[in-house]
Length: 354
Ligand code: NAD
Image (tube, rainbow, N blue to C red; front, side, top):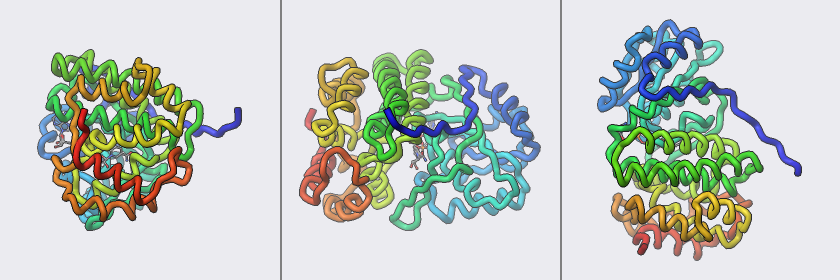
């Protein structure tokens, strides 16, 4: 066995029902005296409650999905003007993403540490990946300065997430696990984390879909989402993420739903060419085959089905093929051609017949 695995340095606190206490302790540990609190208007009241015992000098609520560069620039200017020393983000991947954009461009000596308090299953809090969108092009990059130094997970914060969004966001996390199985830097540790992530997500999501936002189902899913993000950060973006990034930037599609729709198509595409990954995914889904296991889970949670339902135009299929082809890692298990990629995108656009 020969591999190199890098473990990212980060504190992770699971504190169900106790985010405010945990956040105060983490801000103190980070030495924060002038905190920037990033949360969208929708999450503003929640964020204020969570940060009640924290020295907040700047509330910033301009949070936009896929982080447009002009939004990032306004946030960076506000942070510099207020002289902030710690960023606390409360929200989904969009709030975390804005915090990362501010940290990335900050010229504060020693950097600008982030404490992330996630309210979706997106997982951005556990990666050193940033994303910015200029016009219709989304760019992502890797930089250790954007890795949150601390995460506080409080399952009760996700009980307000609508069921459909919980399902889509949880399937976004599942996509981290599955894409990690054949990511360009995948190693055996990533595969173990991804396998356990799949197990937890497949255990928790049907509970949320069936019984509503019970803390038990949310906790399983949240823990799975964390494992998923750690595996994904180490293994790197595979074909699935390249497709979703191109589509998300080009057509301004909702992130979680796009992942949820595309995932079964990429799994069916790659599984026959990745037997070991296929076995691991099938086992984690408690199924004899990965594709069937995912289909059963998707049926149990009433998963999003078609890209056309989320605003992607049909002519967008042809437009997306070139940029995706250029981005798919050469190590992808199945060979990718203009022809088979067009067929995959068309199937995802038209919708999963299951
Ligand atoms: P989001 O953060 O935009 O949240 C989706 C919607 O849910 C928003 O309207 C938000 O206000 C609402 N919401 C969030 N939490 C809620 C709650 N608990 N209750 C009720 N409503 C709630 O979407 P997302 O899917 O979490 O994140 C998507 C973004 O994150 C994308 O830009 C994506 O590229 C990025 N992302 C980055 C990484 C990374 O590693 N860098 C990983 C995953 C996602």
